[in-house]
Image 1 (tube, helix red, strand yellow):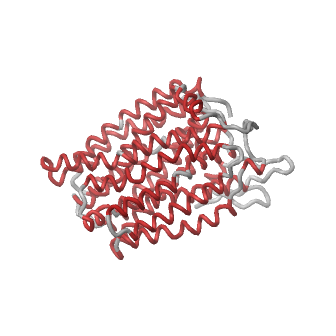
Image 2 (image 1 turned 90 degrees about the vertical axis):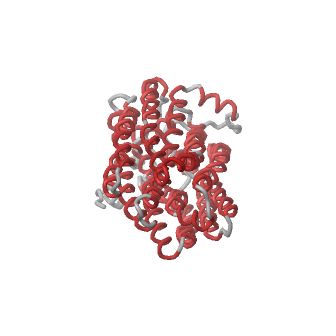
Image 3 (image 1 turned 120 degrees about the vertical axis):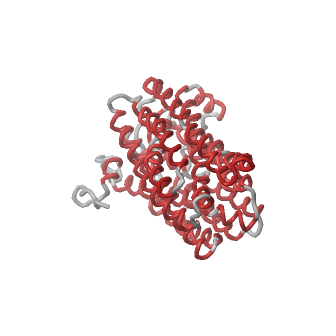
Length: 451
């Protein structure tokens, strides 16, 4: 990775961070620009572990199914709903805690990392399917405290015109973590079994949790908060009032519905395309993790970062263009995905998946930046958690599960091609969130708040 020289005395930083990190403070007593940069890098690394521990189960699904003799429906329950149910139920109350002006969000994130990492290791120790489900619930409980607090930290530390790319940089944890989960999980499963894979990916997170408080500082306590200051009132906005304010924004509602649908399709495809490569193309988990993980992981990184940069660029021309790019990209991805799932050779399928994979994740930075800009500062973590509630309960919770149920339903007719049939439908359903992102873009300019 190349680096961009910084001012004299500062460490060199990657060009991505040079673009997204805020400039150095000039007022006496304020920290230098290095602190926001370190914070963004640390949060991105945390998010890598978040998705590594969350998504490794996708590549381990087939060996787990064989050991516990599971149906595709049970497989979908384990990979999706068992994690997502408690993740989403705890997300809003934890986010309200994060929004309190007295809360140390850095400590909250550190504890979250420790909990989900320990529960990932517990997945490897599970002796029965119910024990594995409970361990997955524990992973969801831990991860519920991460992203709403992280988005709030980023918004407090980065200028408004750089937030799409800054949140997109944090969002790189999704493809990188998923890539590592596929490659490491598949390789370890082939060599040592699926239980060892859970142990190996869980242990480093416990160490990371110890380091987090030394790598980041709470901006509220360090005098680094940008934009409007948090109110000095002792009491938070009541939860009913907060939710009514969010619901009053038509743009926010469109984003939540679209985000839930795109997550439903993305999580479902993420699990079952790996199953397709193993079951229909005859690849091992290790081969699937290497080829699918590396190729699609890299394309997702490009799409995530590119989506944020394009949104920041075209959003300066017209704020509605923060969302028109993701809408167009997701719509154009649908026919290419259909062709990819129709391929009978795994190499052709893999090549065709590259472009739509990048296009389907371009929404992350712009959409979450818009969510942060549609609400008052004291509601930012709650707004992110409501969006995550939609994405994870509908997306992660129901996506893999319903894909598995449909695969079981199609099996008497389609046989081993039942997964392929489900993916055909998923490809074309992507047109719905594309339309909703476009509708949201039409209201964005009038509803975005300053700062």
